[in-house]
Amino acid sequence: GAVVSQHPSWVICKSGTSVKIECRSLDFQATTMFWYRQFPKQSLMLMATSNEGSKATYEQGVEKDKFLINHASLTLSTLTVTSAHPEDSSFYICSASSGAGEQYFGPGTRLTVT
Amino acid sequence: AQSVTQLDSHVSVSEGTPVLLRCNYSSSYSPSLFWYVQHPNKGLQLLLKYTSAATLVKGINGFEAEFKKSETSFHLTKPSAHMSDAAEYFCVVSARNYGQNFVFGPGTRLSVLP
Image (cartoon, rainbow over all chains, first blue to last red):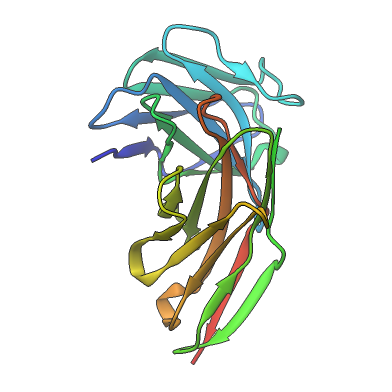
């Protein structure tokens, strides 16, 4: 149980375009979803927290107009990287929580911006 | 506020020898503590967690960790390393009963030599 999926697992896009990443909780309802970013050989950094039906809360330094997060249902959250640039290339990982103090992590999405 | 220190950025052991990965935490609240493993280009896998029950926690793949409040430590151990244990390991703290945010340590890369 407690499976979280991400799609796509790997995406390449051209500079200036936008890309959407989906995060789904497959067998539970996620009241809260989290988006992390991980640079090579570094730890995970929390980007934002989203609760179903409300606006996401962004961590300091994360541009909310660049990283659009939508948590429209209890099983789906999306992260859209708008006007992507090479410096946005990274590994993006989502997690989901049903509110019991645990987070279940997705497999990650590797974004490469050329 | 919570923080995590992983004292070693890289640990190298021989196959069949014990593994010790060190983690110290700081938390303003009673903590929940987790260890995750990440293999290259993969998502996170939960090894074990402490959430206020027994201080010696047994996890998957022969790993265990002991919560020591007096030392603010949660070191990860395994009696005998296997080649498949080579990966990145993250210690994580969250404030039990005060939100769900996870704070990640910087990670320890474990190498296992044949």
